[in-house]
Image: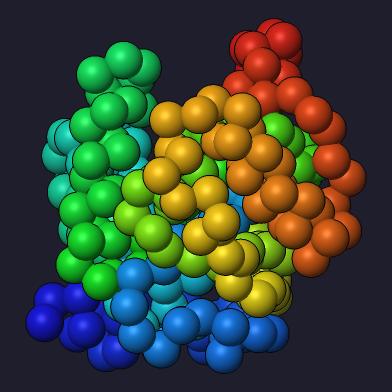
Length: 227
C-alpha cells in the first residue's frame, strides 16, 4: 500500500511532470510471473525512473548505505528508497554476496520483478562494462527470463557526484525477454554463467548502442584518482 501510494500519488506525478520520461517496449515486461530486469547503470536515478514507468511493482537490490544515514537527510533517503521498492543489501564479497543472491531469489520466488545492474556499479563514463555473473546464477536458479533494459540520459541529469538532478528528459528502452531455460541445472558451471552474462551484455549493448569495454566498471573506477 505504501509503495502504491508513493508511486501513484506522491513521487510519480511530480517526477513525471518535471522530467517527462519516455519509454519504449513496455509490453516486453511479462504481465505476470517473476522476471529479472537487467539494466545498464548510468545514475542513481535509474532506480527511480524505471519503477515509476512500468505497470508492475518491482524491487531493486540497493547498497545498504542508502538505508543507514543519520539525521533528516538519512531519514528522507531511507523513506525514498523504501517507497521506490528498493531492498538493502551488503555489497561486500563472500557471505554478503551469497546473502544478496538469496534476497533476490526470495523476490523472484514470490513471482515478482527484480531489478539488477549486471555491471555491479554505475558506469564512470557512460560506457557499458563487463557484467557480473551473479545475475546469471540468479536467473538460472529461479528459472526466470531476463529482460534487458537501457536507461537513456539519466547520467546527464544526475551524474556521479551530483546530489541534485539537472532538469532534462530521460528515457527507457526495454528489449524482448531472454530465455535461458536451455541451461537449466547448470547454474554451478562458471563457464555457463559467464556465457549467459555475456549474452545479456550483448543484448544491452545492441539495444542502447553504448560503447562496450570488456573490463569491470569497478576496475576502471579504481584506476582513477580520488576527486
